[in-house]
Image (cartoon, rainbow, N blue to C red; front, top):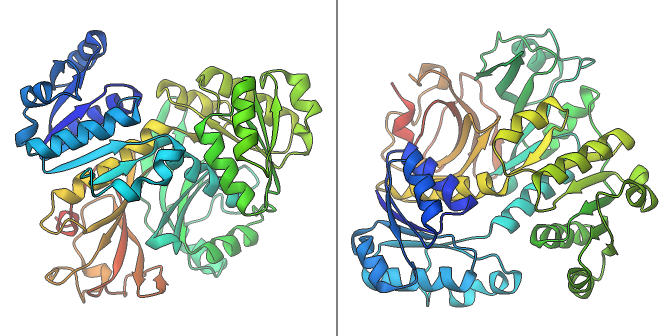
Length: 456
């Protein structure tokens, strides 16, 4: 596909590299020549210096021939204008980043008028992911499929886990719960291995496993293994940006007590005016005495959301050492992800990866004859594994009615859930897929665009 991307910041740069990796022709527009040079030195892309909100620059980038234009500049108004111009020039589809809560809340009123195919809000998407992690307190990460009916939960096995040393087929039999362990990340010194496990796979201490099932079945599984944690009731957030606003709004809605610590007085006033159920504290979130005074030791969860990765890491480590709270930290720099895992921080959230994954899901769906085959796409275990929800339609004769054990799937691929009407099936080899089902497929080293890509 021919894709034009306007704005080469954190989100744009990460998205460009992933689109190039998947074989797309990408043209990047940015006003900053240094940013363009960096991306051109590392990626096979065409770069154009200029204002992407002008028709002249977009024409130079070939927007009239583009399958998709993506606007990710820091300015919402600029992004929407870029998309409007691109559509007028002939771009087939457009995606705009819209971050302002006021704009985002009313975007559906004008979406059709300004010809937006998709709207992305990195802060809202990040808040949604943190919300899911806090709602399922035992997990370090939670992704949802089939409109929330299926959850894929990431969890690290600690040394006292009853799962250690057992084959998966024995686990499924002994715990009497319909769950499927569909991916395992194992660290051995400096080496990291990723497995899509079969039934005879044996778990080890320190493994990071991804488990798929319904929320109720997963709760039962965690209870039976002794790893279930009580529901979170109060949350301390350091950093009062847009993510904190969205997250606090969601947590307050379900009755959680929320306290936000923010250093900027004007921002504190804005938060206090818009979050009547949250407590807003004006202070330095890196001040250890302040954290203790404001009740860190009594908090069920601690979320570090400042704009500086290093600050988030340090405050998260302090909270982990001085409380029993579930700790979540926002990290954007890729090189810090492995470091934080080694330091014992299990729940790491990256807005740029979350945003890129959402857009990639849409881009892949555009490549199919039926654009809605892909319902959802997520990256798991350090972005090394993909979980994709497909809709099964008429014509999938090489898949429908055949027992899963007889399907010739590619290596390192697993069908981990079938959603049939309102029923969730955690499949065995004897189960079959029917027209109208949704299926969740987990794969390693494959970039699936359609169901047919699953087969050898």
